[in-house]
Image (tube, rainbow, N blue to C red):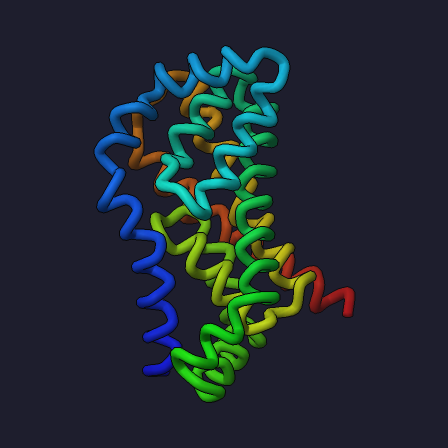
Length: 211
């Protein structure tokens, strides 16, 4: 697993470095009030602006949970949660697709065939789905895990199901926080961490029975 750990470290650094460089400015400009004001300034396209912010989080140090909370304040917990989940899913799909198409060559150079083989073993089995679903609520990991899944050519249907299992709870929880003005990160953490594995486990159980 050493080679896979090296790939993980490089991907994590690619996500962390922009935060280290521009994190303070982003945190200052992306307060809840500023984010809500910016979304409202886009008028009827606020939903598209919110999804766009969540997708470019793959490349820029965007505070995704702030965007989701702002969408909840603008649209309410249901529609705000749905829009937030779609944005998170879009970011995951983009990371998966780009890494699947373009990332393998870089990984071959960095870690060789053994590194890719390690990733394929990890994401080809049950563990891969749990990683994708559980990672959505954690900092840094969503982008890194989605990229690793793409590089390892995790089956698309399994990746999408796990991605949805993680993204929908995350989106609805933070939209609810935004709508209610509830500043209880512990509750959000528990719900966001607990629901994705529960949903993914239920999906896998139903899939196995059907199969």
